Length: 314
Ligand code: GDP
Image (tube, rainbow, N blue to C red):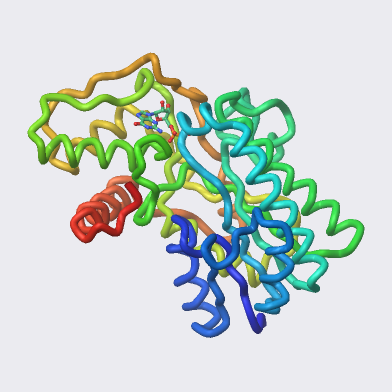
């Protein structure tokens, strides 16, 4: 079906999950994964060079600058510029290079801040996203227009998928950049080992999120690459609600941290409710079904091991 599939961002969090799934479906030698070390897509000309070298007929574009709510708030210009450039240039270069299929991911934070949950794909343009992460999320959602425009004008086949709040092994555990799950796992494991009396969690604990295990997101990618030929985006999530407070208590129980949880309300809550409508995903015969507790156990186990081996991003 595809002779060569190029995966950008292959060494990142989602790349670690998606590359093995693609290799299982399309064969080992078909999938060429590259990370920033091999091709820094912010350097002019590098996307074109990479495509000329690999000569792929499909591209799974995962390269992105992504991070948690605090880093987004502090560095919106970096998130905006890097994501807009990486996406726009890579997409255009893939089209120019004659790639037959281009698949990329964006974030659920690109939906309007006031979108009502469960958030359906058709709500994307109904308002401005949550301000703290708007640099990232506005840059990312531009690819939806690019996907539509190149399909209409050139018949270029691209697909954009929208995962919920993804977590799992290989995530970024750097506390300034981390999303809530790796941040809490790291704080609680370290506090447990030191015997600390408390850990700090951000905000009020009241926001609710739709957490999806990275392995579940990765498992549906080969299907979309092989069978889905539309610029209509699809939410990739569970559609289930978990409050940050509930999450925090679960991570405490699973890591064995027995101290107190203190809420730092000077930190942002972000959007209060962000749950995705997954009917489109289900109508395609697909779903993300790993229960949160099972995914958390796997993530914690991986973190504890990687911490000892020194292979985790801290
Ligand atoms: P968001 O979905 O874009 O808001 O992504 P995050 O994963 O960064 O944050 C999700 C929620 O978890 C927000 O309400 C945060 O305030 C809350 N939260 C609680 N503790 C932490 C923490 O240590 N780090 C992060 N990033 N968020 C936290």
